[in-house]
Image (cartoon, rainbow, N blue to C red):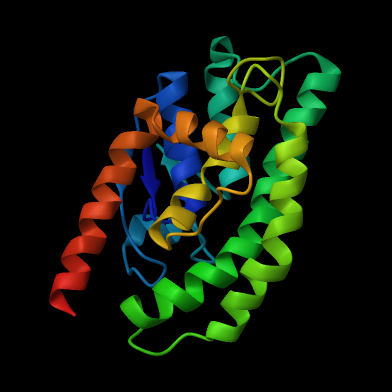
Length: 215
């Protein structure tokens, strides 16, 4: 199976971490949105990342991909089968993809992507407003919801934790201070230190160091 997309993307990072935790081996091709790779364009006709190619089967969208991987390896139990737990797991995945990423994406695009990858200034006002106005209510909510176990659903690692933790690596690249939310800070640090995340994050940080040295 081939997964297309840079792990700088929280969506790609989520799939890579999910696959690692499920014991599924993926060939990772870290390509960008404008790649002319024929296999990528077959897997993702609208050039969305991540995209998966499994033989003659193609699929795009991170949530669709993780549900496909879960169906291949249901014994991993990363998506619960109990109805309420399953619903909560899907909720957290959606929360991370739509609310947390929407906020973080405004910050990351304007502070990192535009100046470093597109060669133009980002809109600092949009990024600053997102960090000041949108991010705190999201972290307030997460701070309240983290159980003593340190896992969001069934007191064990699930897709919920993988999805929620994924965008925080991008906050770290921007040195966003989350000290006001101590439970969130501890929760995120523990998850991103797992081998399923740590290796890819270290590689991405090394990439940013090289990029900064060339600029």
